[in-house]
Length: 119
Image (tube, rainbow, N blue to C red; front, side, top):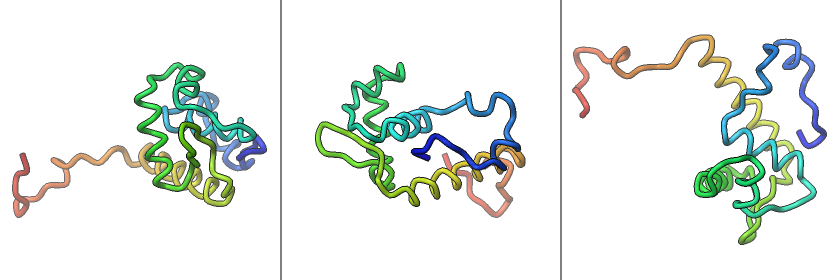
């Protein structure tokens, strides 16, 4: 991903506006990946992406647990494990495609008479 490219099949299969619609996690990962020659403070990432600093910090912590970012207080950088990053990106896209194709699962729709009500 750091080369700024995507697979041509993904490009061909994408809707015209698909690459513009990114959630905050995707935006952070893409930002760090596009600027992989630098390490950033969470507040600076938040400012650049017009996000709340606390939200960015929480997302970065989750990404660190998944091995997708590196952290040396107070700086954050994208992982240098390109294969791990590409695998995570592909998995994310597969999950999005499945959700688009099959819809979101709703617990009440999956519940059977044998299941207890959870409140």
